[in-house]
Amino acid sequence: MYVSTSTVWVNQSLQFDGNNDYVKIEASDLAQSWVAEMWVKRQNTINSAGILMSSNQFLLRLKRWYNTEKAGFTKYSTKIELIIMRHQLTSGGV
Image 1 (cartoon, rainbow, N blue to C red):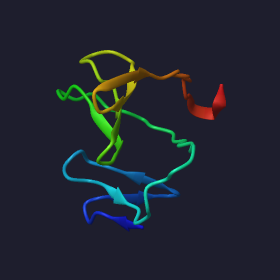
Image 2: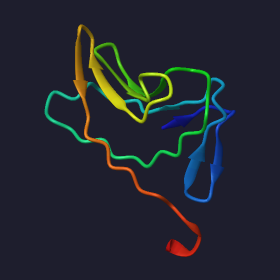
Image 3: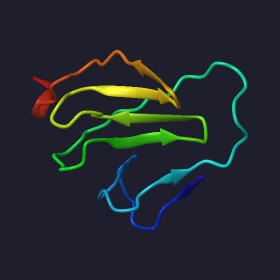
């Protein structure tokens, strides 16, 4: 696994500043079904989408449309909507 030099480790998490940050995992394309799970805390931005994962065949984005709470999975030439579960985080878990 390679983490870009501008990416910062915070405890057990990665913090991206939105400028050329990425994590690269050297692996062959998966031929079978797979699952990706992640916690994301998105900050306000003027960009319409944040790319979470990509390859030559697909793109997984967060907030595809400006100012919405949507995520989308794009298999080039096809769009698939995802189920989003949103939780409010508060101090002390209350």
